[in-house]
Image (cartoon, rainbow, N blue to C red; front, side, top):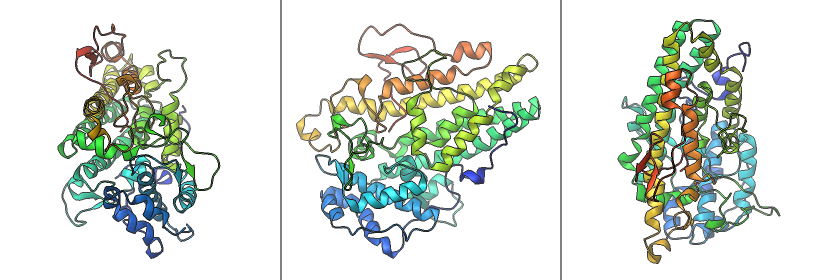
Length: 456
């Protein structure tokens, strides 16, 4: 990290002071007439999945060129539309298929290269570029005035699932500007102004946790797990779901393996970690010398290229932890304010665990006792795989429980003060005495609390 490397120009990285990693202008709702064959199918997607006709109608599509795409908004819409169609094609019938037809594969690869994204449905496709205003001239709160453009199921639950993430990104914009302001003030040696920024940042991160908990208002855990989640899966580490070696794209001779949509693909979450110098190690490793968590690093490949560039830039200027350590002896409020930010980020991850516990872990336990009549309707195998809780995988393809538990614990380890380290840092707990005990939200062993992951 550097005190001399320039602060980032947000606009250069397609980041907005007002909307964060969301586009400042509303995403494009539909491509032009040339791409109507794609748009017609994505509009009818819930019905095509219901009747299991998705593969037949996609196979009948013409092969469209991408030369008609001109603006970034058009490329984003094309990537999102092709993502919905491709995931529906792979997972939309009882047994998944391991080959995408050329009509989807060729344009999707071309669009992906332009956006510096892999050809798979990402967090950006499902959330960042998939919302519109209900009433453009309304002064209603942002979350109450947006709706999704495309869905797999056509359900309220699916729309709400995406929209809460959109709102999370929208409210997180202030964290970016406040964090960068704190870095600027630290460079200028103004500890009092750094304290003020850190206090605001702690409050802003705390509010993000409240936003996350709104998921339960309109998204039922059962509907999410059994009806939506199968479509979000990628084709990496999906052997148990029926994809042994990934997916062949068109006429390619070698299959590709990609992770599915995951909250770990949110640039905002990684930006918060960078601002507070939270380090994530390889899963299962606790030593400071352990390498960077490969999954977290890999998730940057699934972010829009300029957003990943922004995170790389942020990693060169994130001096806050260093600044607080150097000035701790002369300003105790500086340490307390920084540790408050760390505490709020750890609390946010606790809330994330609560959500994923209810939406994935508990639902996966129910799936084991539902019987063949129910499980035969679960398309992706994710919802019916009979695996131990510790081996449950997210749509990103990685093990859920070890990943998020470690991310939460590592967040607390970033505390700067002795008191903060004492109450926030992870301490090894004795193993539970029975299988009914699981790690609780504060890191203590509690009866039946459950656990989860950052992944969908």
